[in-house]
Amino acid sequence: MLNPLYESFFQKNHSSEKIFLLLKNDNKISYKDFICLIENISFFFKQKGLIPGDRVALKLKKSHHFLAIYGACIRNGLIFLPLNSSYTTDELTYFLNDSESKLLITDRETFLNLKNKKFHHFLFIEILEPDGSGFIKDNSTNTVNYERPVKRQLNDVAAILYTSGTTGKSKGAMITQENLISNAKTLKDYWNFTSHDNLIHSLPIYHTHGLFVATNIILLSSAKMIFLEKFDIDELINFLPIATVLMGVPTYYSRLLDSKKLTKLLVKNIRLFISGSAPLTKEINDEFFKKTGKRILERYGMTETNMISSNPYYGERISGTVGYPLPNINVRIIDSFSGKLLSKGKIGEIQVKGKNVFKGYWRMSDKTANSFTKDGFFKTEDLGFFDKNGYLEIVGRLKDLIISGGFNIYPKEIENVINSIKGIKESAVIGIPHRDLGEAVFSIIIREKESKLNSKKISDFMNKKLAKYKCPKAIIFKDSLPKNNLGKILKNKLREEYFNFFKK
Ligand code: MLC
Ligand code: AMP
Image (cartoon, rainbow, N blue to C red; front, side, top):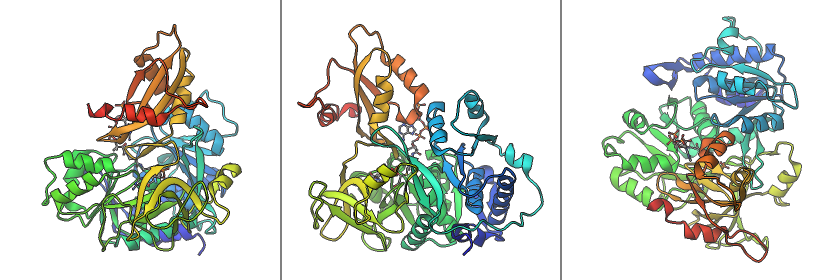
């Protein structure tokens, strides 16, 4: 194949009149029109002088243009680099510098905010307005793009997705063509997707879940998506009767359960409810089953590995577990101290090997080396065990990570920002249970003696520096933090102390 990923996901739908996306106000986009848009953008990239391997960053609201830019990057061998649309200018500057992106496609406001920022390299910025006007329309030609897709190997990097890290510095996970093709094929078969499916898509598309899991499976199956700008419970409920599959984070299901409109009749056409990105509690899964008669299928994945395990489509779905390792993916449980392989029932680190596992972290060879074992397994830093029937259960994390509504937040990054405020002595950021978000960010702050800082001032500062979802949902002031003999903050103790804070 000339360009395996492009051919598998996009080229195959080239002349299909079938609907790919159902948008707001009953607007529809066929596969044919979608591919035509990709070809236009691909032509523009070529004219701009972008060459294979160049990084193309995107900070945009969700739209079909976003997906077409993904396709055009794959077509031209460019590395697709989607970024959270709520990142602040400081966060964005880090990603653009670190990745040495050649092109950023963004909205007008971000363009203006970046005007006086310094970059380590030459960066083009193109504006794309929410209605699609901007560089695509300005440069669109009605001529057909006769250039063939750029030749790519399976091992070539197709995308870089940034994931935060324990040190507070984000790492770019390099995802290859093979990672994406192998995982989408596996999931399509495992979850029984066909061209008749109609997926409700209300996830963000800058993360593995909404972009690779949802979109790639639909493209591969030549199926349809009800493509919603964001998660909105009323909109979702309106579309449930005409959809066949819903993919979401646990918050979707807890919010659905809160709605009086959730009935067996409403979801009668849905053949599959999938949950992932964060733990789905047994209570939510069981309550959902009771109310709808449908058992949510929980699966487990990571940016670095795509999807790792899933409850079965046909067999029994066990709530509280993330199912079996997917076909051709090797999953093992290792004792993190001795490095020994553990048997069923024993808790240890989940390690993964297979075509789904990423190539490494962008320009961080030490971090990459530390993330793999000598025999090539990726260390997830998630803790779990296999039960007696071979179902994987996740019980905790070795990494100091908070998962809030499916977004990953590393406390260190938040603490660094809090501690940089004049008048703050130290701080601890923890995740505590929250019914809607699963976990919520919570900060405990120690001020300098004379400091007059209040929580409003601290919040205002943080909102300028960090994307909103990372900012603490509550700030508490204390005189001191509990520490061990080595001076390390005892976060477990704090988690215990504030466990019920959001339940009040
Ligand atoms: C929004 N806010 C959040 C938040 N989402 N705060 C904490 N955690 C979150 N997840 C904040 C906003 O900044 C805003 O702040 C306020 O909450 C309301 O914003 P909103 O846009 O109205 O939020 P809402 O619609 O309620 O969003 C909740 C959500 C959303 C759960 C629908 O967060 C979401 O779509 N999550 C999905 C994340 C995801 O796709 N993860 C996949 C990662 S890939 P303020 O202060 O302005 O009120 C991965 C691998 C794998 O993990 O296995 O899949
Ligand atoms: P990310 O780095 O955003 O890709 O998030 C990956 C992390 O999300 C994993 O390492 C897990 O900790 C967590 N995760 C994903 N799916 C699940 C799940 N079904 N249950 C529990 N944790 C999950």
